Structures are given as structure tokens and as C-alpha cells.
Image (cartoon, rainbow, N blue to C red; front, side):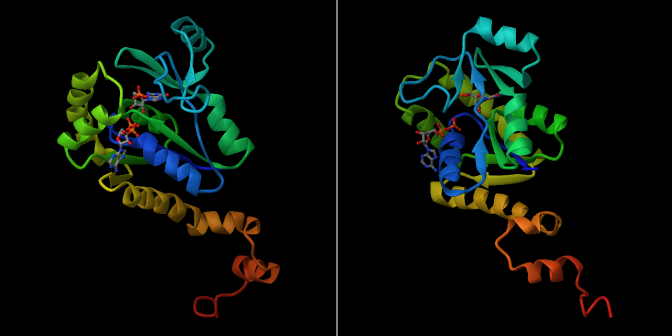
Length: 216
Ligand code: ADP
Ligand code: 5GP
């Protein structure tokens, strides 16, 4: 079973940018592509950034219980498909990354308490504004996104980890280390030790040998 990591932050902080770097640098790691009724931005690719669907299709999927959670964010619907989490973490045994807004992160954590939550903080509100503007298209929700950030930033202290996204590479390294630390935790290592490139003799010793300090 893979683990679900939830990456959240006020819009414009750099979640998508950090996620893209993480995905290119970590093996056995896949992003859950969420669904939205928002129109694609010029640089966005359908099926990679989001699955873009109409409001009618979204409403149909709500009725079919397709989403683990969904929300109306800045006038558009966004939803997390249940079956993708299952495919990645259960069928394929990989770790999954969910990039989601703050209210959605709380909802998913409530439904899946084992998920690990990471809050990305902008270094300042001025920099956050600059980043939203720097995305290179006119954002009609700029003021709304900034005022929502005031409400969202205090939520950081309810997350498992808080990472400041000042310098991109530093932030990516920190998030990566959260994921890697989880992967090498004792319980997980012991359960999945056969998966690692390890000599059989060492596997047997670690799993069943006697620790001479503790077990004489
Ligand atoms: P989000 O997904 O949180 O809404 P994005 O990943 O779209 O945010 O990032 C918003 C803008 O900020 C983009 O133009 C991106 O290139 C830029 N950005 C992201 N991280 C950094 C950083 N550490 N330093 C400077 N600019 C950044
Ligand atoms: P944007 O329009 O900037 O791509 O996204 C707006 C916000 O919606 C972001 O904070 C993004 O992370 C969030 N979001 C994306 N997918 C989902 C989802 O499936 N559920 C929820 N609740 N929020 C989402």
C-alpha cells in the first residue's frame, strides 16, 4: 500500500510548481489528477494538469459518488476522484500526491486520517501577489485569492508539516525529505524490506535475527 501525501497552500504559493519538480525527482510517486469545471489556462494540458469537464458532467459525477470530496473554489468546481487514489496507492502500491486547496485538504484528512498533510507557505503576501500576477495571464480572482490567503495561512498549524516556499529548490528538497523519511520509517521498512535491493541474508537478519544488545 502506498501513502497519500496532501500538498496544500494558498493559491499562487507554488504548489503546482513544487509538485512538478517532486514528480520528476521521485520514483514510485504519482500525482492524482483532479477534475475541474474551470477553463484551461493557456499552458495547461488536459488530463495532466486537470481533467477539464463541463458543469453538467461534474454534477453527474457528484450524483454517481465519483468524488472523495469536491468544492467550489473561486466559482468553479474541483473534485478528487476516489478511484485514482485507489489505483495509485492500492493497485499499484505507489505513493500518491494530492495537490488541493486548504478546505479540501481538511476534508480528505478527515476521511483518510493516515494521509500526511503538508502546508506550503509563501514567504510574504507581497510575494504571493507577485506570483499570482507572474502566472502570465489576467487572473480575475486576484483580490479574492489574496483575501482567501489571509484565512488559509492560519490553517498551516493544523498540518503535519509546514514548508516555506521561498527558494524553490529548498522547498522541493524539504518536501522530498518528508516523503523519503516516511519511506524509511522502521515499520514500513520491516513490512516491505523484500522490495529493496538487499542481500537475502541481511533481510533474514534484520527481520528475525537477535539483536545482541537487547536480546541476549
Ligand atoms: P499554485 O499551484 O500554488 O497556485 P503555482 O505553482 O501555479 O502556484 O505558482 C504560481 C507562480 O509562482 C508561478 O508563476 C510559479 O512559477 C511561481 N513560483 C512558484 N514557486 C516559486 C518560488 N519558490 N520562487 C519564485 N516563484 C515561484
Ligand atoms: P487553480 O484554479 O488555481 O488551479 O486551483 C484553485 C484551487 O483549487 C487550488 O488551491 C487547487 O489546489 C484547488 N484544487 C485543485 N483540485 C482540487 C480538488 O480536487 N478539490 C479541492 N477541494 N480543491 C482542488
